[in-house]
Image 1 (cartoon, helix red, strand yellow):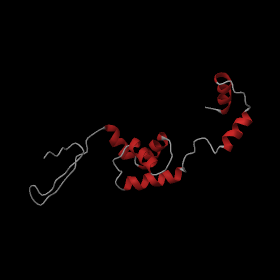
Image 2: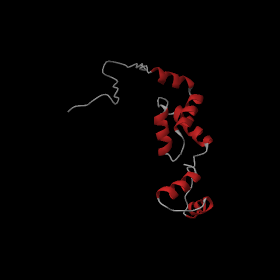
Image 3: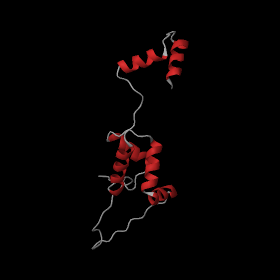
Image 4: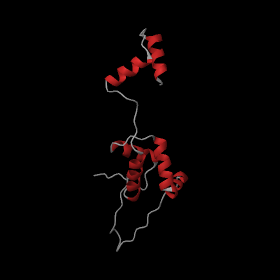
Length: 123
């Protein structure tokens, strides 16, 4: 909401009449500020490291959450654009919504096990 709209809504709804410069002075004196986003280069490096590591199958929503959990404040559409530039093939694969089959090579039967979030272990 622009500062002019804030001043207008204070006048209309709360009957508080202040000038635009006074509103800015109040905001500055209380240590408040508009939303500030992290440096886009830091976010790009973080996403690139995650793509090369364990986050290669993550979509932009989960990657946005991971950025937020690591203290990086970034818009979701910025994460989507960065992912599209860095991992175009992965984005296309996730958009097609195809199941990615895994290949396993084991020495013998019952030698390798795989668990994912859909498996339930019962006692």
